[in-house]
Image (cartoon, rainbow, N blue to C red; front, side, top):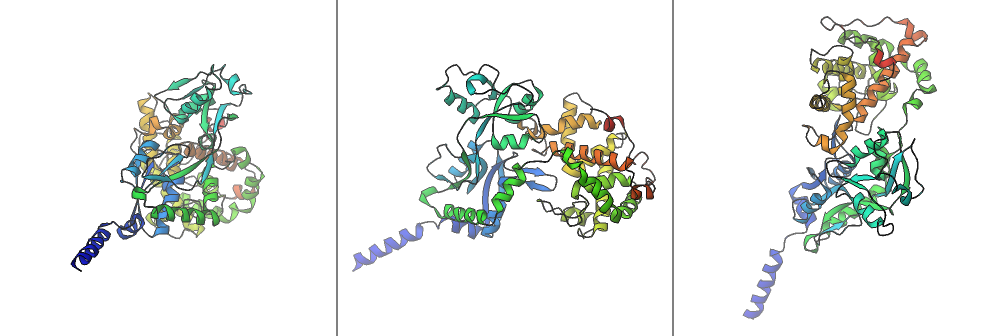
Length: 475
């Protein structure tokens, strides 16, 4: 009897010593630890806060669990996998593709995006009919990258295949060189291509070089504990069913309209049908904050197409697309009220103008502030610092305009204070605002002629927009 009791006690102690399943630990702690990368396909700080497909999915999963998200970054996908393997993170949402061997203590979650590798060339260049033909030209890839490994595998079929490996670069930088014509070909994943064609429209796909692979999370299964993986699987089933994943991928990687389309009949129609109902408020707000009403109206069209019910994927709302925090900070909290949105946007733009160093003259001062309205002043300041490091003038918009897209390239953003930014977006934003402003200045509509220009506020001389050669000629 004593022996039996001792055996039962031993079994009970053994059972009690077993840790609870990982999912239960997460729920009890109230925290999901996720490791990611500061990159366009994972996580970055956008103009309205954290953004990125991996970040958004991880946020939704934490919300699904009812716990807080603790997100941190490492530099590479390999480092992210290691963080999960050693137990510092519960999962890695770092844009990792299947087809690689994982540590025993980790498993891939469900694939949520299919990608493949492309041979990319300049549209105005010569398109190679095969990889053998491309080998006669110049192929450059990042040293140690998955693209290098793909070329090594292809060389088994094509022994004459050669390429250049760049150790001090990243794929975004090489794609930039292909667009400029200084490099003939490179390899890029379908997501890399989609993210870069917005800023480099001359890029084109010559060939598909690999079968499709799935982008997946890497989930901890240490000690054969499948509890978290099971919950991840269920989350992705639900996310596919309700359209979350489709909408997310379309938002980040979908086709981006060119500005030629934006300047189509829609704008002229909206000039007649939408602007008149807001025009008086644009003028009043411009007078109050010392702005040109046409500049403010051009920004409003770029933000919402003068649609007061517009909602962006980041949660910005209203005619001037203010976030809830920004609207509250400007003390115009009702973003659904077009008048409040216009006045809140005007006040925020005036604040950006006041933040720009006083020594910077017009029109550069205005365009720097408009870019900051879109991407945040911190990222614009990072670009100004990079411009100065490159021997450029950090007080000229045309110099900053050339540098901002570098914030999407790791070799540049890794050494900035605020990290990755979709740097081409403020460039396009300012370009579009300038184009809309040109139309408003010369539009022959009755509404455009009916109101006088706004008067700059005292002490803000030169703040009202003036036409410049930069906006009317080629850069």
